[in-house]
Length: 97
Length: 399
Image (cartoon, each protein chain N blue to C red):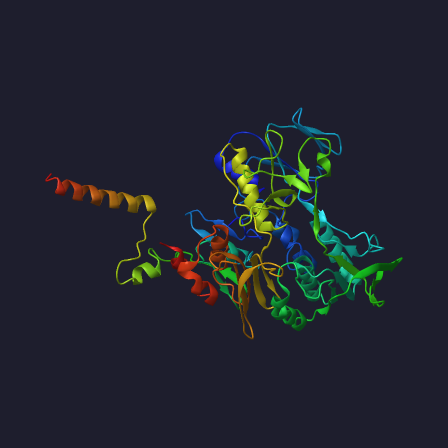
């Protein structure tokens, strides 16, 4: 976000990182710094793009489509809490409680 | 700006003042060629409220050129005599274009060293009376300015001292695709040539004399021959300067409560540990953010900067270069792959276990992963094949 030379990358109100297509000049600096390698290039428009978390859907399309439930769409604290809850339930069971 | 916002992300209190000698409020400097091409207006380039620069209570003072720093205050003094007392200070005075003194006539009207929005306005106005512009220097700055001029219908000739274009960012064998892309786009390129003098009359620039004896008629000259750090204001202050302002691993400078970041700072190169000074936006912003955190009392080590860390689009070719790309005279394991429309080079150190540099032309996917591998000095044994084939993916780095 900070590497962008035109200020096109920002975090929106929901905390999702977005690329403003009008400001993007297709310099690819973001491609050069994104440590996850998730920035794509729209070759015809000459703009950078990224996952926008499907703002028009309740649940992103990829999560809905995943046949094994490997993709989980929850906040980190929420997910971590459910893992801890499950762990403590198993511990309780193991202790015969 | 990056530093100020980093401070604000951790400290909502305290006064932050940014002093800039320029008349314009902070802007994205790399966008100024768009002013020359007419594609963007100055307000499209403003930093405030753009991208991550939405912080509040950051006071920016323009037309405020600092001429000295007094550690006794501590305070800085402006050219107009105003003094600002402070508790902590960040020196981020950047760099200015280097105008080679051996070229005569560089003070003529129509000669530009593009650096500021003011320069760009001036250049955009001069386009009206320019049929032909000569660019001295074949680096990225001049290439960007050249394309902006081409878009305005100006004929452009690039005069490059090196035998190859973009010699600062690529080895001699890497430049082929880029050279063809530039020529296809309409740039006339003269390599192995230098300018000796600029001739002018009452209308401004009329031509450039080259060292091969010829003269190019033109109405505009753009000099892109590198930059020099702005350190003069620190003379007599006791701050340690070695070309640039010497910064430690936490962006701290030799006197208490002083910090440096950006083009003006001497930091370290992460792979070799050697001192390095770079004039690159990506590095400047990262170092600025690091300095801001340290100024807010959060001790944060800086990861260092590569000498080369560039991404851009050159004509129809995306281009990324990072780390060690000039391999002559050193011992490296080099893998090159060239096709009609793509080229890449990955450079490993002599033992072949660590990546030290990469160049990508055409296909720049996942470029940042290579940066991480270089910077963190990862042992590449697990994914060396993927690096060489450019099939590397984030998942390869997990484990």
